[in-house]
Image (cartoon, rainbow, N blue to C red; front, side, top):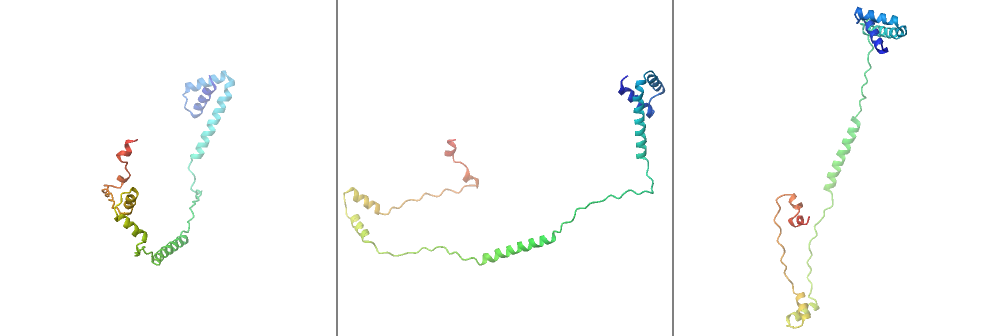
Length: 178
């Protein structure tokens, strides 16, 4: 037999789980092989000590001895009162300062257009004389065309888009090149 088998049988014999026939066979084997006897006896002693230790730990304790009181550690309370009051004072001061500052800000006036009447310059009068005359020269016609005011038609404003994101969508022309 192997050592593990002998140790298991020795534990079972010590705990009283072997029947009489198996116990007799184990004793006969140990008598024939004395070199196996120390393993069986060592395992029997270990099993017996374990049984005694379990019995001592599980026996009921006497009522004379009271169990030790467990210490309960509680977190120390942080005093938030003083910092909270200071924070409230600072916030209220900032609010009052912003309100008063808004009331006393300097008024910004919108710029008003100033109209100035000016006398016509003599050069302009000379050009008006040239513009009134009929000239056949290219440069005279060009100068007269530059001095005459032209009315340009402004492009019509686009129709308002339906939503916010319509402004950011790509047009068909932009998508066609992708």
